[in-house]
Image (cartoon, rainbow, N blue to C red; front, side, top):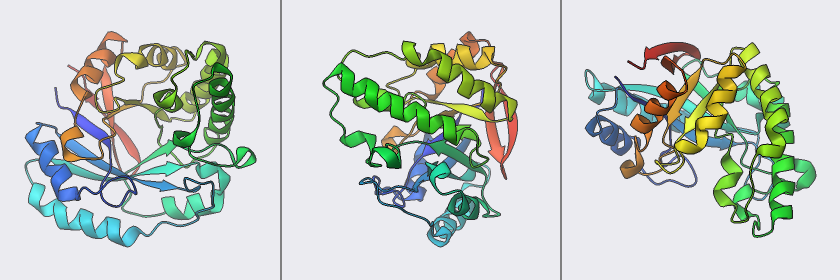
Length: 264
């Protein structure tokens, strides 16, 4: 079985200082077959301010500088984690028009503009009511995102749960999540199994079963690594979980076109 990692960040993301060369070296050392760099481009900043552009030049420069060093060792793909693209469709379309782009994760890191747009990371989640208010807003945004064309997979669907200390579950959102996954599957879009550096593999079991029940087949594996030591963490375990949930392939992308790697 060949293992790809399709969610990684470099120094071009505000929460990473890692050079792409170091991330690629870690991927090769971990025995991965493919690494996709998916630096952050959020159309709302962490305080909720608007952001409408992405400078592709540094991303292309570091990609082209590292690519020749990996020949025969590792396939490198150019991706992007595009946050809340539905809040500015014109900007999202311009960003996604890059001809070298292989893959786009559509993510939601921020509350909706109507709720202030602040990054979920900064919320207070000690009370159950606060957690469910945040999740209400989160899935409302995802219902808008899934209707767009600015993503290949929906990113870390369980993202806000990372920060919630109060006892909450997604049970009350199950019908809404099913509707979201049905739309994604019908549009030929996928989801990612985001291992959160190996911390949240088993948490994906019910989501994967639901996506498969909705007719979905396209699932990427991603560590969400921001440093070299996180590259590939949980990817092998994620592949085992995909097999256990009845999937036969893990998905990779080239120029936004999916291809299937057999899970073996």
